Image (tube, rainbow, N blue to C red; front, side, top):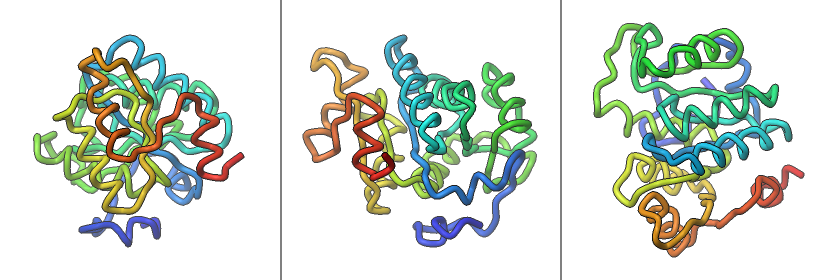
Length: 205
């Protein structure tokens, strides 16, 4: 169990995993999160930020969901970097089915972790709960695209409770998919427009 998870609320008793377990002990890691119903721009930004951060040596952590999560994992992998997927179900569950190729790749070349038994079903309550692990494994949380009342906000709340910096890509005030982003900036989150902004803030230059 990585030491950073010892200090979160309700730390897991154990983790099941597939892939490169050494990634759990990499010091420099960042959660990249956002909507499952991501726009094309949101997907592009998630991939681009993850790609550049991974190239800079940052381990990208996300939740293996459709949309922003999947694009963040793909970006880090395509950069030849490290990425960790935190599941809300068991390792043997093929969920979501549209991420089947990504899931197999992550098991082989990256890392999947879960606190659930191998055959555990993907129940709705599991996902907000697992989000404490996504932020817990990370130095900070980057929100790419989020609606006001979205699951992304639970990861943000866990990150705030864990005293992690929250980074946000700003968006148009007229874009409903950016309302969560802009609300977080009003509340004091750090606006970023390039991966370099994050690297600089975290002293990872």
